[in-house]
Length: 398
Ligand code: FAD
Image (cartoon, rainbow, N blue to C red):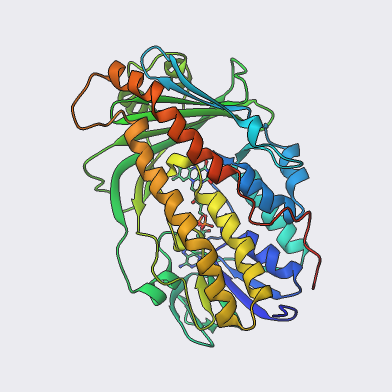
């Protein structure tokens, strides 16, 4: 199906929505992105973009710019929390292909890269456009909070966890609190730590650190299990002392990094199940709108990038919109469901959770023998998959 001159409305200028906007516009479509925020922005924190996500950015012509501003990640190192003893070192170079490495990226840098490329390609990004609800159908209608309506030949909901497009396709449901909260912070990388993600695993919590930009910054993600999350808003500023208190006793350099934190934000981690229905008529959903995940495989944004590519590719190859969208869901659903399950399962390993209340050193010893193999298999099928089939950069209007 030719996408040239198709009028496409995308809800949400996150990583998924902007990547889809760029991919559609490279096929000659006329794309408008509706974003509720007053500016395209991201939290000042890091994100891991693995080779499967980099493959999409490379096919969109952005891999060189990504590589220019981000440290190439060399390894993920799993450590015990008290002494920081190494349990597993996963060498990331084994997943590297031509132009396809693993990067630690500042979220603001990635979102700016995508937004600039999309605008240069002619995508219109309209800010302060909060969508109130969506009506599905062959000509879907987007109802804005300001009373205006819009639509198009195709409407894509890339509007994240609280997606209105998901609600139109699957009914209105409230996201479920997963029993986990996450702090995010950045500090100066004073020790000039190597380009490795360090994962400190403790009972009911884990801490991840990795360098950003020219390695001058250190990114911190700290996850703790909690029974309740009472606050209405889904993330808030928190006193760094609360973060330090939650991770007191973490050694191997983790405590020293936490000492430097001056500002921290705290998230409640919420989820929906993977959506049953991803499309109807000319409306489809992607990214967190379709399959929010715990961040324990660092794959939410990578999956959104893969969705963006496959969505456009499936429509291009489909005989009709309905046919293309059906192929999109069929190509994506099993893989994302498996990734979401793998991320949920990682709580067992990262939080030393097990049924018999063994002491932590025993779990780590068991983990040292068994878990690495399984984890390496997980990494293999996630990172080793290239949804673009090695496309260097898509031919326009082909
Ligand atoms: P979002 O990023 O949520 O974007 C949705 C956009 O839609 C937003 O701009 C929003 O303002 C807009 N929007 C929402 N509702 C409306 C509306 N009604 N009207 C108009 N606009 C609207 N993933 C990785 O791949 N690697 C990582 O290392 C990683 N680390 C993470 C660490 C933490 C602590 C967390 C919480 C997540 C992490 N993730 C990671 C997951 C990743 O951040 C998300 O999966 C990803 O950002 C989803 O992208 P998206 O474009 O689908 O949705």
